[in-house]
Length: 304
Image 1 (cartoon, rainbow, N blue to C red):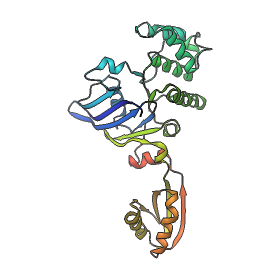
Image 2: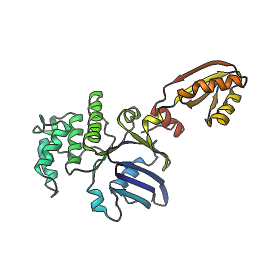
Image 3: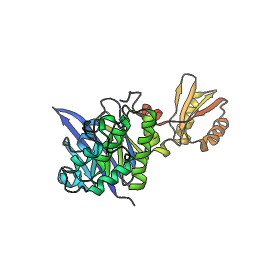
Image 4: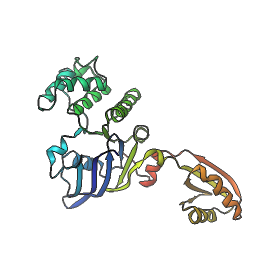
């Protein structure tokens, strides 16, 4: 069983008498890539700032590799690498000098560690060039190298695809998957590009109004159910049959019944409708995306 790398348990944050975070809980195992989503004002940035120690939770528990960030801050943070609001780089010097400058501030980072992260992020051929000549994608890779030099078990990336072109986004996605699969690093990714979270992440946590609405959920399992819609002779009767017989919540929208069901059960559901005297005028399905799920859980709020 993989060790728990990150745990948030009923975390709250009150600022100037206003409760911003109202009880967020989720956890991550070693080697997992988790997407962290929420609409504007949901509390994503505040939560990330608490995880990396830039802000103190009002109540609740945040543990990193079983060390409390409030009771054992130094040991907890020694297991974390992060890029919050973009990497902090010096453009007028080379990539390798950026890494050496940061490494000089830590007794634990060796020259071998620097060489290893340069190879890992794929900058070996350009690491001696000035950062001012780097593309945005290369700067993001250098930032990740900085975050990885001290061999953390948890990497936190806040909006890592900002400004990247499709090629840069694809490279970043592959790098994140490599870190998880080959280096067993847990990666927490906050992004407004939901389609990328779907491609990049094993799990997802969604928050709304400072609370968790979906906790550490498996992305593949979430998307295994399909959005199905029927046009029945009596859509309301069909909705009640779904709820009573299949424990599935359906919605009658305009002139059709909509629900999320497994395609494996669809034939049984259709037979059930017919047996109960309903005529199926039309039935179809569409692949459900993580964006569909997000909009449903957050009631259509826009994500940023």
